[in-house]
Amino acid sequence: MIIKTPTEVKNIIKLLTDAGYEAYAVGGCVRDSIMGMTPHDWDICTSAEPKEVLFVLGKKNIVKNGEKHGTVTVLFNRIPYEITTFRSDGEYRDHRRPENVCFVRSLREDLARRDFTVNAIAYNDSTGICDYYDGAGDIEKKIIRCVGDPDKRFNEDALRILRALRFSSRLGFTIEKKTSESIHKNAPLLKSISSERIMSEFTQILMGKNTERVLLDYSDVIAVFIPEIKPMIGMQQHNPHHIYDVWTHTVKAVAAVKNERILRLCAFFHDIGKPRCATIDDRGIGHFKGHPSLGADMTRTILRRLKTDNKTIDSVIPLIEMHDDRALPEPKYIRRSIAKLGEPLYPQLLELKKADAMAQNPETIAEKLEYIEKLREIYENEIQIGTAFSVRELRINGNDIMTLGITDGKTIGKILTQLQAMVIDGQLKNNREELLGAVKNMEI
Ligand code: ATP
Ligand code: MG
Image 1 (tube, rainbow, N blue to C red):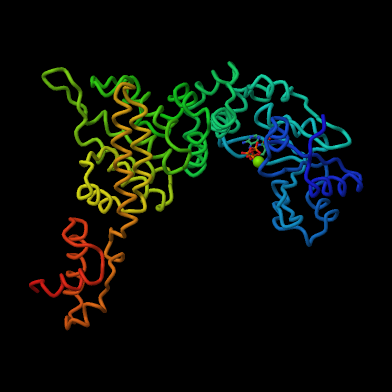
Image 2 (spheres, rainbow, N blue to C red):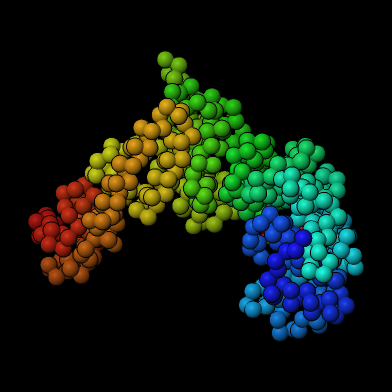
């Protein structure tokens, strides 16, 4: 089998092999190529030690010299390539990083330390595919399987548990039985992994095409770092709008929503407040009053715990808070919702509402989607006519008000806020004449 490698990769491999070392493309790039997908980057492994790589490739091309861990990053044609010396990992103490790495001269040993068979394939044009663990066979069968004994591998590095879920979700592969059993068994080891790493893998799990299956099958793994989901699992809703328990509904909403990071996170967390808000009325119907704002509070706590950046939190929280907003589909009410949420987030709210509806009782979907379409039409129209959803968007500013003889800064601020509220309420259009006219008529 021939894999089409970029010219830069061919060049790096040639320089190293001409100098007497072995060098191969390895890992994700080989896996993706065999699957017919375009790799997003190319990693290279070599028998040359870092200082030998430096010598062969020339210091001027080196951008990062992680000599200790055996990885040198070079820039060829302005694209970075990671070149890692064959190594076997030393003893693991903290379920994450080996105490020391040990350079070895054989590819076979290097491939043995890699996580999954599909990631343990190397390639160069002269040797072809080097695949000691039948990774190509597992790609064919669409299987994620540990290289070696799963219990041992997950104990060495618990992050591999989430990597398995990530590859399963992204590639649509099933996790092989022994590997899968070991994941369930060793999931608590994830407690030793840093929040940043967990969050990065978790969002990638949410963004894979197979996320529904992975979340349903491995909810116990997710619950290790988000225990708040436990009461959602199997919780019946006793409500004609729903046919799934809270967890299944949530997972289906994640799979239904557009594949964007913020939206996937919103869908995952949108109903997390439900278990603590559940009540049942005299007719036996379930209600979850207040779950959006409780859910938003819980999500803030969880995302902070997972060291999520503030920008993400600032988008996710208001969307969760508003996800169940049922404003009448009339401009006046919709303008209020848009202003409350913040105009730039509103299209995302519509996407979230759509996914939420699609994960509910199929008999009610059409009617809900129709409602959401009305919201979209109103929103688009308001954007077109230039409604001001914030003071900044008003077609007059503080200077205009000063020309009317009002000089006190505080008063000017109050006037602008009031004008904007009047625009939202439909008492005024966002144009200069109307706005200035309104200021003249105001009692100040
Ligand atoms: P992606 O397409 O997401 O980059 P990848 O398979 O290239 O997937 P990387 O995280 O870039 O994944 O790692 C490159 C290679 O290094 C992997 O294919 C695997 O062989 C090896 N590897 C990475 N992380 C680990 C780990 N925690 N344990 C063992 N091997 C690992
Ligand atoms: Mg990679």
